[in-house]
Image 1: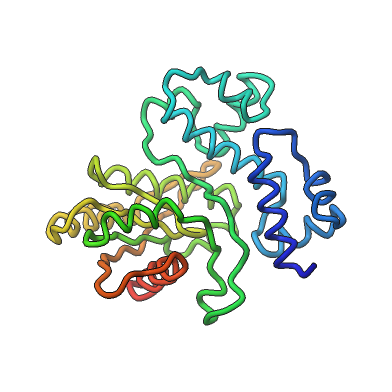
Image 2: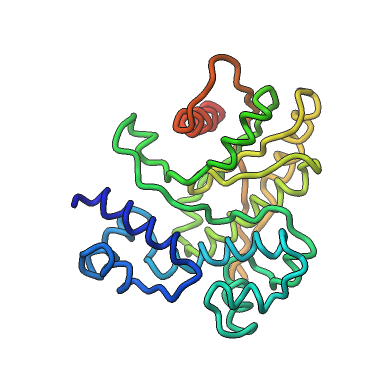
Length: 266
């Protein structure tokens, strides 16, 4: 089994077992490899370990259920995702989302902060090989319904030096990016994370003036600060508007097209 096959098996096993007891050891055992080898591969490709990825995926799925199932208690959802107490779940949730599950349920719409990872591209140009492929199947389904509507593409300017301060700072930058996009988005507009620091806002509009107003609103927040351990760090986003015109796009082509649109607007 080569490294890409190993990653694919590990990611699939994790996704199928998010509601079960799962450890780096159990993932490695299922993939017939050593824990140290799996961890090294994971960190080299994705820049964090298996345990952290499992937590981020669990909390992402839990966030979706908090919004979709208001009748479920926070404890119900915590137990479903293998947290044995409200307190333990709240601590993990706070680390990912920067707020408690109860506050999130009242205030948030966007839930997929850490979408499922896919194995890296082995084909394509250098730029695409550096992208972090994620599952955008829901975006693709909506794209088919709204293919005449506009996208707003966003990514963070200079995330590398932000991450060099701390990966926690990078996570704060991701959350702030979502906050800015949510602040400007209309009720029918939907945000998706499509990579490491790349996002799209799929509007429900064919009105270019409306979409330009949204993009300008996001852009006006460029330079506003995020704060980490008393240090203020300016955050700015590249923003670009795009609309697909032409033949029907396949799933993989949509991913490439959106990332190319981001690159073209830098």
